[in-house]
Length: 209
Image: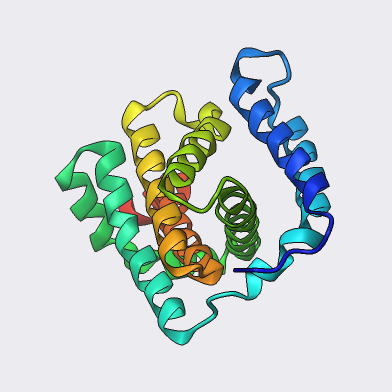
């Protein structure tokens, strides 16, 4: 079991506060994405000295490969679940060759996706799931709260929300079973690259030209 440094109690207080705040946030005035980013940034850097050792766990070539491979498989899965259209999914997959030039012209978006995956997996699967007990109940709780955290961008599409919840469950289960943060970071990163490409207007312009 990872040995954490003595600031654990303060970190846990912050994590409990953040969990509570995230759950009630949709029903209170304090809703803006900008404000939640400030709060998350504060909590992230406050707990980093306590949980940073989690980053070094499970760095193995097999987990790196599986993270990249399963992340690739999650792309068409997410498109299908969110759209419930096999035709749309096949069309998207047939045009994945456009993804490389898309990110070549949008390197800032590419790196932003990695930073987001690293931050979210460290914060949610690493720190929060570990804090809640690293068990199946913790996996479910984190998946629910993680979905609530992104409710603003998901509430207009139930199936997209369902896909997001399933994705969160998969990440949580993988981390629970492997204790490899790098595994879930890479899976999250690759999946987000594909989904962001799919949702981009530039994707439609490139494919339809």
